[in-house]
Length: 353
Image (cartoon, rainbow, N blue to C red):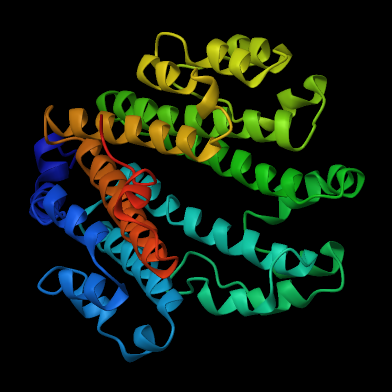
């Protein structure tokens, strides 16, 4: 039987709406940022969904374990939605779990490269992800080539092998990391195209905005921090952005200064971001660009929630908002560990305009 949108999304919509009602209000986020230390931060979260996560004994011994547990809980909430989904919608939401796994792969490869210490393995998430990967073996491999067999029967083998020459030539993991991201979004676009027309339109917009964010961030990093020649930058972007066309990105590749790049890619469609980032004193603060662009995505997710509720938009918007909340908690926690002032912490939080 072919279900209409209400039949398709009634169960998951009820679950998502209940979860949305339990997102932390701005007042709680402010109290967390204002906490004097880590114990007070944990105390503010008592009585919330996060109380049990942060009550585990290992958290008090190592606050970084709290970050791991928060992300694992985020992934668990994500997986629970699959019970009430079917067909192409379920396949797409399930595919999104690979984002956690790709981050794990990047960490293991960075350890292998010597860019991270082996102790970082203790903080990657391992709970119920799509593929069972031996991260320690990957991290301890003598070479990237020796690590390849561990990726057999996963979607990650192909994109890693495809850029091995580039990796050797440049002496950085960036080609591999970007290849993994590009391949993931290629498979994601294919999953989006299998949705019905309404869901497809919504998913294209929300995922397209996230692709725009990644492309802008990568462009800045590769051009100004890694010195990749303009002629090669076209290899390092994800197709399928919502507002940034290929032509616009190519124009940005040719710009000489960061200010000119931002002027090319941010005009009009990202006007609030453009106005903030054109201030010369802000150009050196790349984290601001990422935070502001992410806040733009949050704003779009909230707009989507205000539309017809029985679409994939409700699920995707919830996932965006929940991921934002968890990232904000991690940002505040790290701020407390670094003994930052509230004002400094708040400049790093992802919020809506």
